[in-house]
Image 1 (cartoon, one colour):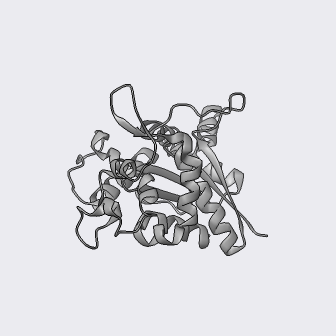
Image 2: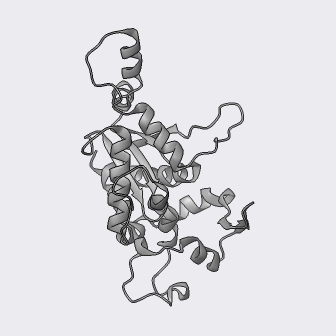
Image 3: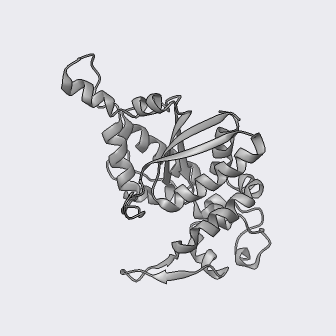
Length: 242
């Protein structure tokens, strides 16, 4: 069986779960063994836990492994810097591509990109996140071996998209609504009965301890999720056509 390898940098362990389950589902359909290898965050070998991680850590990783060195020097310092480049990691591991994932619900917090985010559509959010990732990597265009996954608003949108549009939780939305334009994704999941908790800031959050089951729900309904969510479809296309 042909093997495909994708390296992954993403916001957190729940994103790893969702992407990995989708990869396994596509693997069965195309008769190829798709491996998702996490780069950041990475599970601690001793505790089996993941470190705190979010979009800022994705930004930090991209800057560290981006094109920070643009000369042909062969000094030890230059060679060490080049060994950290993400393209070298892809090459050394013989990976098909590096996936970099960020939720587009954080666009308002990215303040070093000019002009600052000022759009109101999913396209504007995706374009801004793409511009940010490319700038962090030191790239002008998306490199051949990189795949930018701009989850809109988040990978929880894919979970919400497993439900039919005629569900009562969507009664306030216009006919033919776009799942990727829904801002209050978690609130609708709570209304559907998904477990939640109140964090230290008093904010209601999705209880992630059950996320393995959520990821299975996404993967087992991947045809519907692909139909409703462009980013999920683009990810599956990447797996299918690599």
